[in-house]
View 1 (cartoon, rainbow, N blue to C red):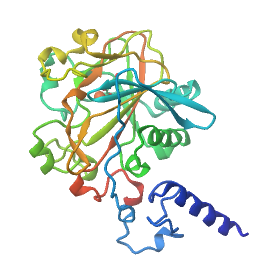
View 2: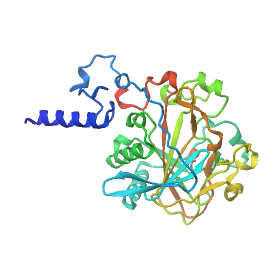
View 3: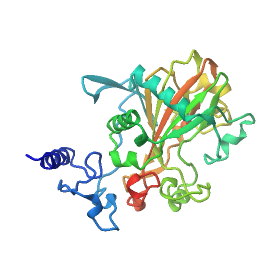
View 4: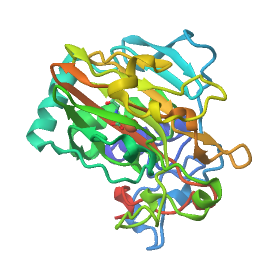
Length: 336
Ligand code: OGA
Ligand code: FE2
């Protein structure tokens, strides 16, 4: 068999196995599993998403009860544990999601890339500004997953962990790296835009419009956060969720200042090298099955680093609103 035939055959097998289009390495598959050998040969109005009917509802993992542990397969030759840590919002921990080698590699990558002082854009609303002191103290940078083979591999693992289609990951923001020095923190906030549901529906998601991302023009649609701890923090640096599983509890001023409120939060996750945590920032719209308003219980932040440094990486998986599910994402290579 010629090498072209072998390649085509293996692509076809991949298509049939995954039954998805627009996924790497099956992005050239039609929904029926046929391979499109040369994507450029399609006409200019080709959009990968059009080949993908998106006739599913957004995946959402059932958390069960706090403490429930599920064995999951993410990499060959071993299993991981997915431990339910919260139900409202669904919140999970996965110890050793990254190997120590990957953690060291990622910290080095972020250092080489250069981490700059974190900016607080204010797009998370006004509440966080009431804290008086600085909302966030630390350093951040963004690195595209497809710029580095290790990141790309972890992006695929995140797709498996979250059960989210790979094309939604490709349409999401780059990996964000963060470093908090001693004393660094990030007071309570939402990763997605909060606000009135009517307003949210009217505005497009920020990942689907071109810059500038002024808060008035778009809403952040970060359906899931996957936060990975890249080192062990000597003391402090927990991730706190002051409203998690506190049914009916309203948001109080005291929940915001995590320098004061950290340990009183209903869920407090200790940073541990290689551990990932994931949670849903938004509810799934019960009617459309696509992204709905922010889940107010998903309020969270990073507590003071008391001793040492804290390195993290965030992957925010954006999902479109139902009526815009075929719109381009500014992050997808195939549309740029
Ligand atoms: C964030 C965040 C929490 C933490 O970066 O958006 O919430 O523990 N971080 O650093
Ligand atoms: Fe956050």
